[in-house]
Amino acid sequence: MINRDINQSMYDYLPKYYEDVPEVRAIIDTESAAFEQLHVDINDVLAQFFVDTATWGLANWEHFLAIPVDESKPVNQRRELIKSKLRGIGTVTVALIKNVAESYSNGEVDVIEVPVDYTIRIKFVGKLGVPENLVDIQTAIRNILPAHLAVNFEFTFVLYDQLKTEYVDYNALAASGLTYEELLTTI
Image (cartoon, rainbow, N blue to C red; front, top):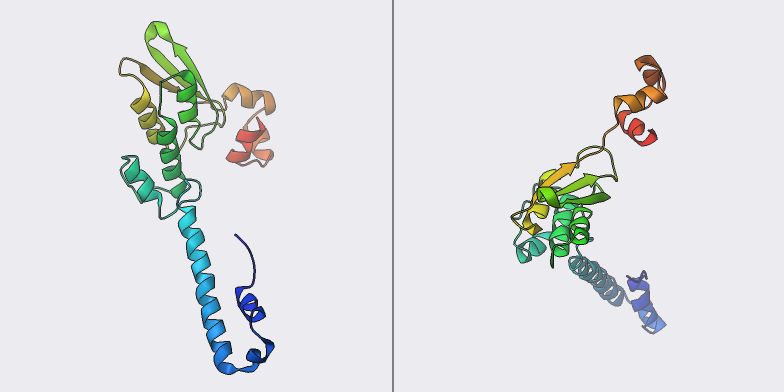
């Protein structure tokens, strides 16, 4: 996107004696406002062609990928679902499963095959806790896995023993003044 003053550019193309004519000024001011709005609209339409910048165009992506449109979901979760669907094409390998799972906001995962049990374990190691859009992740993974494989999800949490090594008791923990979110990142 080029940042320039369209109004001034239009005046620069005119001979100087037109600048003092009120009718010309009205035409230039009106047309430059229309061109600026056109520029904004073109950039907005262009943004809809990319999942990371799409807003009102997410419904088109969802229709294209046969994903039910749910406008009540946050935009970031809708984008993650679209990305996972786009990434989930091809032969199912550990790398593909990892790529699909990591397209969601909870970040990094480890994918462990357990062939004896016909199971795939997906362990979330990027962030602590359960991802807020776990149902979407489970659906995306289930859609790409062969039917004979089971899938288990594992999550990482702060354990009591980890807290005990850092803080003698609850009073010491409370005295630290850390919020729950801060506590999760410091351990």
